[in-house]
Length: 112
Image (cartoon, rainbow, N blue to C red):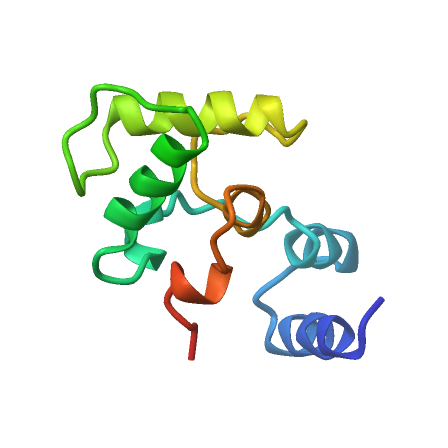
């Protein structure tokens, strides 16, 4: 068990917040909550248009709305991902961008 978890368990036991150690252990090891993230929030301005252009130049053209990560763009991404034997999520990711000839650093915002 990591040191921080042991410290948290000890603190809970000492303050009486948790009646027994087993309950404290269970609470400390619960699965983290998954958070849905909007893929566009991670993209640079104009990135969707660049992705669509790369999809079109690689013969994955759909009737999408230019510059919008819409259903048609996601469908084209899924087709490209399948063609390159990548997980077909329909969401832009680094491996898909590389397969389309785009540098991930030119598409995704840098996290600080």
